Image (cartoon, rainbow, N blue to C red):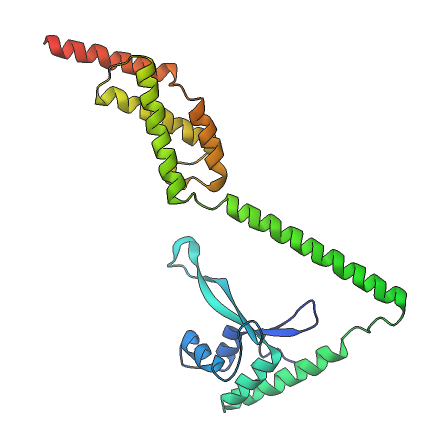
Length: 243
């Protein structure tokens, strides 16, 4: 049987269809977002008959050569009904195609366990599979959270910490600095932040960087090179006054 519209079999045995793939086959002239919104008003419920997801689409004009678009994964029953609603020859072909797909996959359904041993094994396998999915999901969520950008409150906290550490160093060492000399201290501490986190600018800091930067600031002292530059600036300033 020719594949008119791609379908995908889920682990639970159900078959699903991409809304955009069906939209393309039906040759609907209405924009996908408007068309699907109208179709969903025929009594279909989200997370029951369909689900929303984002996918990448090739686009040479977009950053990175792709852009994210909204698609929908729908049940085979919903796909059949939507095809019938179109009242077109393509809609009729799609509906008949989905009926054949449904028959084919029903014949492929595995036999249910009959003995207590088989039922126990199925229950254990299902539990282990679920536990694995939960652990993998928790891992992905942790990675996502740690790689998320720091929020404005954390960014402001670190900015104030940097200013505070610079000021504390100046006061504790009884230094009298002009603006150029003080700026060297800020350059030094910002350079250190970039080195310990691997970012180019502070705006790129991630959640996992927050504690790293906090510890670095706690132990920060300007490098010998920075102190030499500050001394040189002081000499140049005195020479300028004498001229």
